[in-house]
Amino acid sequence: MSKDQKLLQRIRQGSTCDVPCRDLARLLESFGFTVRTDRNNHMIAYHPRLKECPHFPTGTFGVNCHTKQGPGIAHVAAVKDAARAISFIECL
Image (cartoon, rainbow, N blue to C red; front, side, top):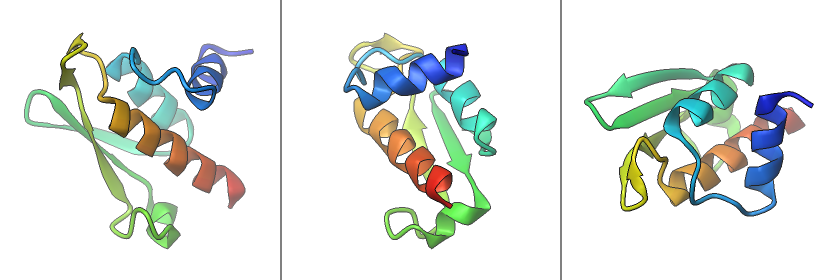
């Protein structure tokens, strides 16, 4: 099992509070997302097929990388959004 698959499995099992932003970006890129940095502490993830999902009508979602857990750790809500987006892309 690859490192990305292990991270995705861990996220789906509910461990969303200590995911490093760089690992989340690598995971999203492995599913075909384009990830870019917006300012210093935010990432924007985009996938053209994500526009079909009612949760992400623009095809994008943001990831805050400066949270209470520490710098470089993705916000819990962003990790859940990433898991939802990946699940939608997998179903297509």
